[in-house]
Image (cartoon, rainbow, N blue to C red; front, side, top):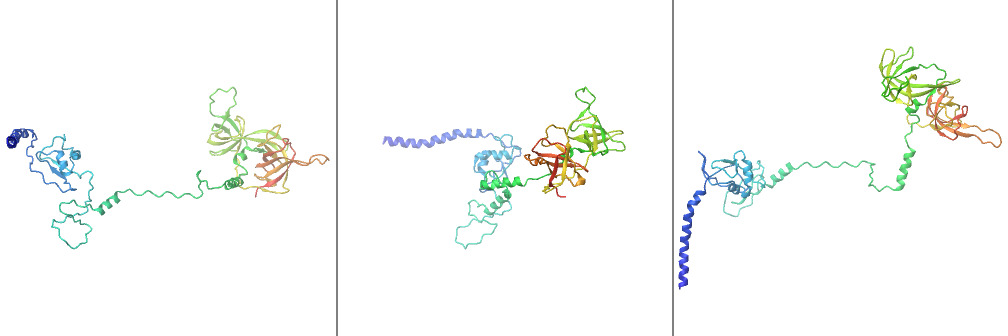
Length: 433
């Protein structure tokens, strides 16, 4: 009985103790509320929170509210208070201090999908559940149960996603027909060999090139050609020269004196040559040195720029108007039997031993039907004596320049280096006329 009495006395004293503690804490709670409304501030209590998923555009701060509580009220998460502070930095200096009466801007809840503004969402008024005939839902109406969050408009969300989706990438280009990479291993070795052989058999063929035509040289055939004279290089040499002779290389400017009763014009091309020697009955041997183009016309001379060089150009060399070059194209000469007969006049350059890529002159030209691209064979005739060798082919020559009664041939192949004047030659391949 004594123990029971003690317990009853403790239970009776507990309410009195709690009431005393609350009475002592009441002044302290009042003292912690240090927020004060500004003059003329509206202290109207806040409106009721909007339904879930619907956030009003603004909120008026009431006494005792913080950004923490406002974020809990509208966003459902107090940790989202920095979003409200970010939207109101022009009004809030310190997020720890907000004042009653301030109107804060509220944005949509972070992380919540918002329905498009053009979609009308209506909620049915609360009614007791009762069986009813099913109705066909309209395209812009959504029925919701009281107190339940409105169902998102799936069609509107899909439309918004389609509108924001980037356009599909363009389709890859179709593979080009005939293109082959190193990873394509389907071709057999036989096909590859066949392609290589076809490429060798069908190579582009040019019988005569422009450079071969102008650098070949020719015989004057006792003709009085309109030679001009090279005066010299117009540039001052970087190193003092020991003689008065000046030389010119590609892109240098030279002065040229035109021949008597002739003139040059800007844009004219000149062939710079020298006369190597004279062959009796055929005139001088003309050796080309380069090509120059006239850039300026003066009273007694013209200035020309060297654009192509075949040899050393200096004072005293001669100049001729450049002969036009007619490109024969990719036509191949055709074999002929018992072709035109000719004889070797001489080699352009004096060499002890003849070699390939040298120029020799033949005594047949345009008047006899020779054209650039024709191929001659230089032969050594048979002696006709018992025990001696029969006719031998000495060299194969391609014609690269023609005059009236002579032609210049480029040695393509040589069997014997002794190409002396007077050796016979015959036409073995003829260019189509």
